[in-house]
Length: 293
Image 1: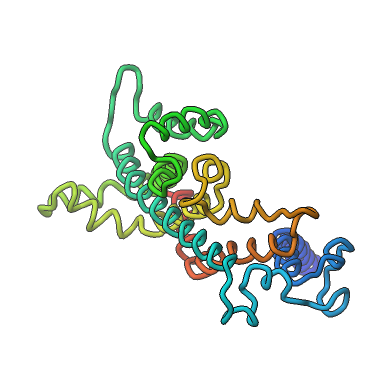
Image 2: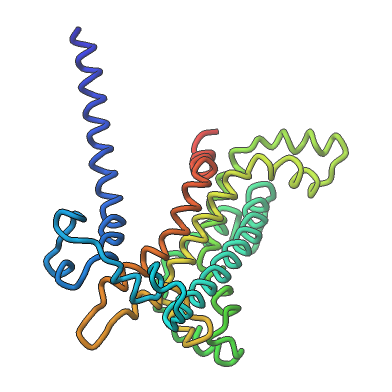
């Protein structure tokens, strides 16, 4: 009886802790979503519960031309949002895809082959990639400005794709490195005995097994590129600006337009949330596959 009570109490504590953590994680999203439907006084008073503390209104979405009553009306703000949204999609998908391609090949080489460059070995090369995450982005501001100006890459999507690819490449390499470490090398050796080449074994044997990890790495890289603000604000001015820059620019003569910023943030979060929910199975499999051999 005591064991049964202890088991029930343990489950209650675990689920209570999970509920508290879920509330902590989801509350910012709830607050952002509800703020997009608040008027100025409701934002200042901190009213939180719709239809109890305040009456929802499309004020935030109307200011962006995204409310139901504005869909048929010409809106320069909506056109600007769609333009920035398109830039974010192109830059994020391209950067994540390129980083996945390069990172997968680099990780596979570091796991399956032995390299020696002076005193660098495979472990040293892997740590070198990881160490790039320690470098603060602000340190690279002036070099990138000078380099991009000389190459005429300022305010271009190609310029953002290059810097974003470099930014997320170390993360992709380390995720895929764990993935390939968890795959027995005997599978590839058997494929080579059966007549496949190294590339044939990689594409036909290794990649299908590592697919969940590749999906997880791609999603993580895309999220980081989508949310990046510093380089987007530094290296662009008009043609290549992205959603985060537009969100941060929601200020007026009377202060911050919280309702507009909340509506923009909600619209920016929605695609990532949909992708995360749709690919949740692959994301969990990919993030945990390399933890146990």
